[in-house]
Image (cartoon, rainbow over the protein chains, first blue to last red):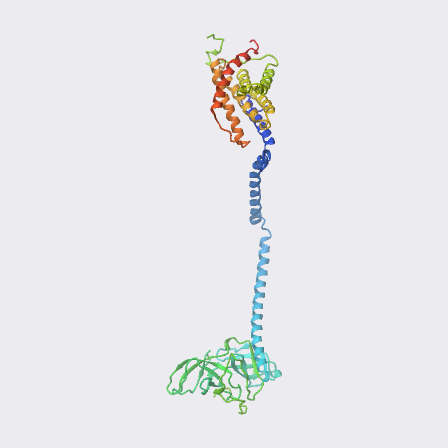
Length: 305
Length: 179
């Protein structure tokens, strides 16, 4: 009380005495649900500071963690980016493997369906060096029994034929090459006409007279007459028909996706074959004679008729 | 009016005499008031309307004219009254009220001439009201007891206490030391 002006001393004394008595009251009074009043007051008086302190400390800690204590964040960020890139690469690889597994499953099923047909699976390892020719390279060659003029197929349809066979590699002329061709027929009507490449993504069916009844959407299959491919293999689907001076101009979309080949089968025989087909790819048996073709192998067959 | 009596003409400032009491007079009077307050209503229930400890607090506050002394005296009398009250009255209820009354009485006594019976009557009514207001406020805030702020009974009690105060204060004036 020494530092307090004398005229205010009594006021401070009054405040102190009243405060003491209020505390005395608080110690005595017990509320039914909340215990002694002194406890209620103490908690009520302290809790706002505790709350404010908790918020303050939380804010400071948050600010510290998010704005100041970032020495390792940049390093961690770079590491996470690297890990993220690695994970993306891994995901891409896994997706590729899954897609490959799907493809191989289709190939395996196809191979099992035609287990009597000598064929070997091959992986596409390269393409033609120029855009003028439509060729691919396979990772199998003479060691695997691959020879020139052997047919190359996928479960979807005809791909082309082997034009060169090396020790461990072979070159395949795709059906879309302008020098390529395959003996084909319309699956519905049985009209047999050659189908050849144009150097583009579409094939053409040649020598179909204007009088013949041909419609877009009709399926084109191998006729087996070229001595390379067995009959009834899917070649493609007619997408466009125009009348010409003598013959129709018929454009055919290849059944096999020749622009994205990855695995193929090479038919390891030059003899006529009779292949089985899934129900999903029905070929009208009435459109072509049943049984294997009796024609002899022709080394030049498969090129432009 | 004498120039040495209560006013200083030159500075225009009122001089109010601070009364001193015989040794132990304040303590005895206060103790007696508390004891009588607890004792008399037992035999004379109607005397329960009186608040002798309050009247003693007011008197000595007005007479001593020292706020510190007044509030401490009010505090002690009030706590003593609380202590002698029933279990429903926590210690401090009347202590707080009488502390404030003692302080106010001392402060007012230092500024006003409170020797006149009319002034004492009026001031007692005011202090009775203040005392009652503080008690009710304390009961409402701290004890959760919704007491009424004012009743006719309280108004009558204020008047009776004021009347008694006029005579009691005259009696207590005899305890003063002769100046």
